Length: 261
Image 1: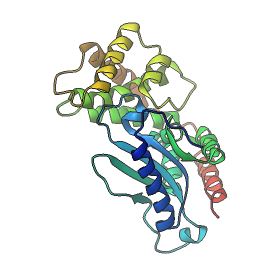
Image 2: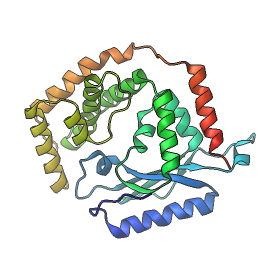
Image 3: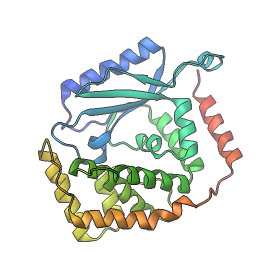
Image 4: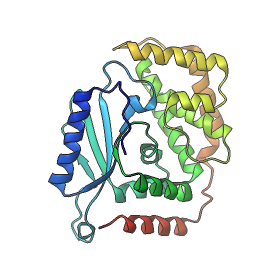
């Protein structure tokens, strides 16, 4: 499975492919899922955005049965172009069970370097069974709050705007658990008013053609939107889990064991 837009640099993609093959060979792991995260997958890249490839890897069964487990993260050299690293499947499933939306987002990225659709669909199905809406809401709430601390540049503002849009999406879809990954879809499906959407579209367009957005303040209409969604989402802080934790852990264990060779 592979889905790459023509806007990606072919030479960069070739190097990412090479790094993924090297990870499998050097670490003796299987990579069933490798995608693009970051601003390119979130729908607001800049001309100089780096490539944030994230992958999931699975070790052989005997590597998990040891008193000295290996690291649950594999990293490749980081530079101005490449940010390629991945998580062990065990780490990923544990985080999904805890409500970490980052791991869940990777399964929905529109940019896929390589992937086994059977693996992805099975992990998505597990997510639908065990992910807690309350934990997902808290995840986006806390991300948004962190990004609003300190000096907020236009570039950094996007990292508050997207989780705020995710919180809005959750409010509009009260029976759903996992929001879409990219900002334009969140705004479209979040019943956001036309003026706010227009301001966001204009800012996204500006970022797409500007290498450095500068330190000026974000549009006031978007700042109000973020503040409003944070206020509306405060209830996630006290919302209790609704699922059976023992059942969720059993389902997570069952899926994890099914992926071991």
